[in-house]
Image (cartoon, rainbow, N blue to C red; front, top):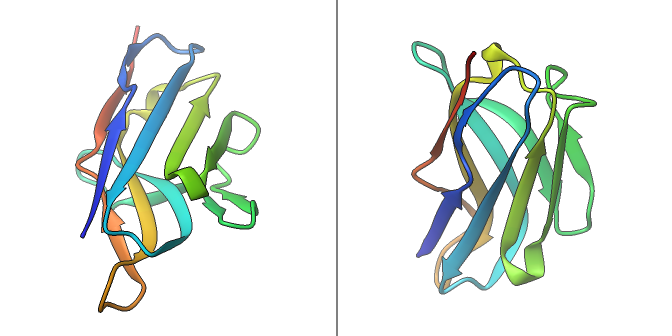
Length: 120
């Protein structure tokens, strides 16, 4: 299976910055893409940003210009630089990987999440 471990969350004031990290491990044959999703209380999980093994990125409109996704998928590392944070960015941020392990098809794997709270 695939294990994803996030770190870097915390409490920050509006306008501040945080950098999230995610490390993948396990019997991974290949990772096609990785991404960050978030879930605020009472809301559904939503896409924040994704990056493919070829380096193509995609962002939610709400974070464009403020967040930057990066990483080395071959090394199973993913980052999210979050600048100009707003209270509405408060959520649990989950790392996702679209990966293959032996004897399975390409599947989605999720980390436990890291809490980001933006408040004065």
